[in-house]
Length: 366
Image (cartoon, rainbow, N blue to C red; front, side, top):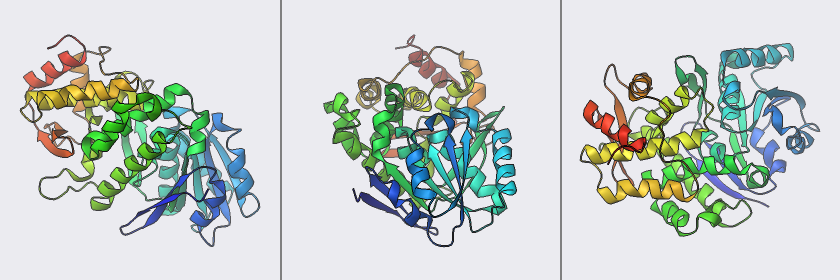
C-alpha cells in the first residue's frame, strides 16, 4: 500500500507516511549517506521487529538495541547504555537511529538521537496508537527523573515517521483503548469530527481492522502537525491561542497522576482523567458551559477510558502539578477550553476551584 503522506513543514520539514505494510518505505525516509542504523526497539516486540530488520540489513550495518518496557526505558541509565553502544559501534554524524515501539521508545530513542554527537538523524516507526498520534510527531524527546515526567529532553525533529497501521492488529486491547485518550483529546482541542465519530460508534472507532480508526489516526496527526508547525518550541501562539501548549490539554493533572502511580498507569488513561478534570475546572472558572464539560466524560468513557480517579490525595497531586513544565514560578497554568476547538490558558485558578474539580474527579463532588 502506498499510504497517505502528510507533510510537516517548518525549518526541518519531513513526511509522515500512514498506511499498511509500509516497512519497505524506511530507506527512503532515512535518505542518502547513512551507513549505520541503530534500531532502538521495545524488547517485547522481538517478532514484530523482524520485518524492519529484513528491510534494513541489506543496505545498512544494523545495531539492534532492545529497550525496557514502557516508562522504564525513559531513564538516564538507559540513555547512557545506548550512547555507549553507539560509541562502541563507531556511529558518526551521518548515521541514523530508527525507533520501533510505543511512546516511551520514541521519547527515549529521539533523545538519544538528539544528544549523540549533538544530533543525528532519527526515523520513528510507532507501533502503538498513542505513539502514532502523539509521541512520534513533533520533535519532542525526553526522559523522566525522580522529580517528574519528561523534565529532561530536547526538541529534535525526525527525518520521517512511518505509521504502519498493521502494527495495531497485534496491539493488546488495553493499549489500543489507552491510545484513544490522545485521539479524543484532539477532538476537543481542534477537530470535533473526531468526537462525532467516536460517539457515533465507539466499537468501530477502536477496531484496528476497520475504516474508522485509520481516519481517526489521520485526523489526530493532522491536528498535531498544524499545532506543531505553528509553534515548534512551545513559545506561544498568536491571538491568545496557547500554541503548542494546546497539545498538553489535560496533561497537568495527567502527569501528576502518573507520578503518583509510579508511572504504572497508561499515559492515555491518565490523559482521559486529566481532560475530565480540567474540563470541570474550566466550568468552575467560568470558561466552559455545563454541557461541553459533561461531554468529556461521555466521549472518553464511550471507548472504555477511565474518567475518575481517587487513588491519591489532593495535596500530593497539587504539589506534583506545581513542578509541571507549564507552571511559571509559583503560578499554575492550565490549557482550558472556552468551547470545543477554542483553547486558552488559565493562569492561577483558585485553590477552591482546584479542590472542587478534584472532588468531582474522585466522584465525590457535584
